[in-house]
Length: 258
Length: 303
Image (cartoon, rainbow over all chains, first blue to last red; front, top):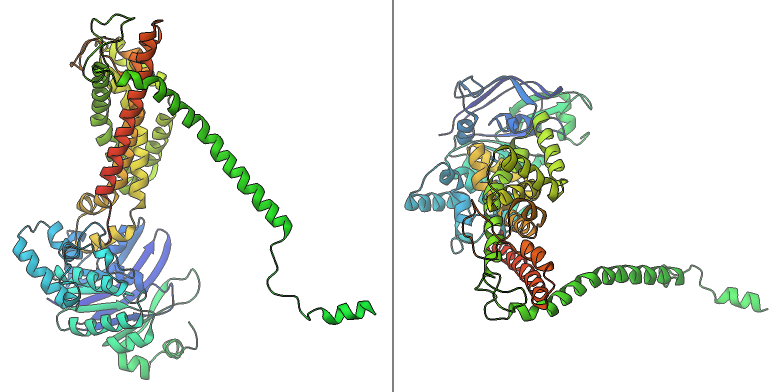
């Protein structure tokens, strides 16, 4: 549980387009790291390389190393399916499976991996839903479709689904950008609890959110349109928001650009 | 002076909302009348056809032996017998066709949507396009040349089914492809992110989500090939009695029965033609109805 991630000199390409250049970041275990930066700077792209999700896009490739507790997830014999089982992900848009009930959505990861034991699945479903602060709201309608929930509930359902497979790391790609402030608060509280057990990396456009939930913050920027995105600064969240080392970081967080 | 009065009476600014101008009203009326007329015009042949077939065929399909007997031993001028043999033929030929065409079509569509990249996928799409433009008589002659002339097999219901496969395949591929493309990529990504392999994502997430639409497409494709006439004319002989063997011998089907009874100058023959036509329409309708029910049953619910 809760492993550390070391991103070492990673370059990411989409076909011929050089999207991200030379990123090196360490994410300690049981810690929330926020990626901030303007649109198109490659923070989501970096996040997606952490569980090899970018490979879904044809032509995408990565150079460099991503180490999970010292083990390169881009090693020659590493199965991307295994990587994704170890490093879970929550997306920007809540995306519960429309054909499945709330319970089946939560245990989808286990069920599709072949677990049949109904009792165990029920236990996992309850634990994951409690973990995502959704249990009391849905415990009486576990067999109803997941798409009948509100947006905020759906997003917590997706978090429950991601933690049901007990990953070592949880990646969140702007998990609150489609939600209202109350649902956002619920998710942020949840992130605070989840970091007891998981290593969390979150991409967010909302700097207050980064300041509220994260322990360390990485600021990404790009030199111009068509230029690769790069990491400008990574430091303790408190330091980034009070006394950043780089001028660009200060300009960005103080709203002078972006 | 009158002009000053009217100037004083006039409001300083014209109101923000003007009444709809006469020109716009006329144009709107014209367009409404035009589309309504076009709709009614399109409805006329459909309604006419249905009424004619029902009026002329109703007597035939309500005779006691229509749904349960064949025409074996029935004289051309005798109002007796039924089309059981032809219904059996139509249904079995379509089903054999579906058993071959549906899996191949669905797998092709899955390849095109989930795996196909580059030249091969483009070629497959192109071939499917060409296949969907092949006239049924050409498909029938192709099977005749290949299966009967070159391979030396006898004319049979099976040969008909093969020709129907050629006609059904592009319809199934196209409709399934459309349905699979409607499944949002987010669902695939959600599944991958849980550590589910690609093939399992397709089987357990993508296909169930698209199932309802796929079923409708397949059912409509079956209903379509059921009325095909050219293959049965070329590839199987007509029989007035029941033949359960799809691999050998003559076998009737509804379109074939209609073609044969058309040559019968007696009133009883005319009656059978209309009756068979009505039966075919009812059969196709039944399939569409089943399709609608199945698709409603398997549809994605949100409440």
